[in-house]
Length: 324
Image 1 (spheres, one colour):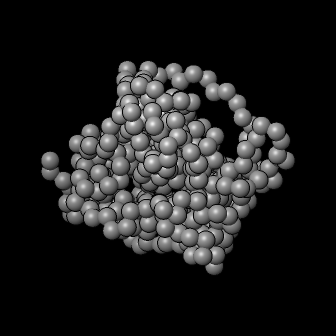
Image 2 (cartoon, one colour; image 1 turned 30 degrees about the vertical axis):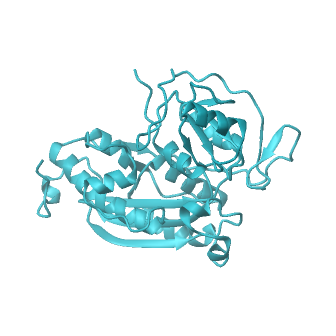
Image 3 (cartoon, rainbow, N blue to C red; image 1 turned 45 degrees about the horizontal axis):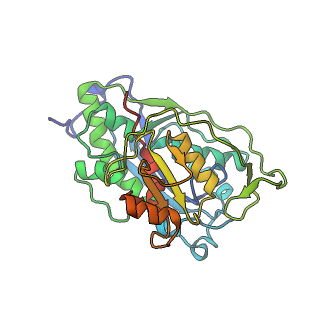
């Protein structure tokens, strides 16, 4: 495959392509609607994907930092960091007039949009581009759609995975050759509209029976029965492959993210939430695989794969569609 080189000019670039990009990565306290950003990084790129500058900040989430074992940011590190409203103007200046680019862009965009809404501001973003979607458009020969796989494909070295600044750098370096390949083939970029939130309910309803809290905050939601999963069970999860819609996932033990919120996110991704472990279970999620609970004992006896919560939340970012 012949890549376009640095001599490619705007005159030969597809006219429909944007004139600037903001490659973004945010680390957060979790995956739920009420979770917060703890760090953010932006690499600004020109129309051809060349780096113009970069910016990074910690953000005080005003709450428990969540999965420290993923992002490495403790309460002590974040205590003196600026609040989101204090960095919103600088963040806006970096995003303004550009396409937001991220790996699993819907996640980063939703977290950013919610932070702006809490701050009673609007993010200056009109379009986003997901590099997972772009790699699929280009039919890149990746074993999966993790950032590390995309980076390895282009020979980009990761230094600190789940550090917002390094993840944004890695993505910026991998996005440029992807963008050039798309231009060379005249591939339509998978741009999607961003619709900013215009309001945010900052005062949750009082807790009632049948509700559970997330991270010991005052965020509440009702317990309820979910509809059945519409996808057939494709079998067990295989290491280094993505989850697939229809897989039966069971949970055991405590989770840092409220269990119901974590199950909601899994259900929304197309997974079947199993209340027990059987030979049909695709995966067991537990932070204590050595605990002698009935689920872990059964999972081990059946040979059911077991992953921890951190690994599972990463897998949730790229769930493969069900077989047609």
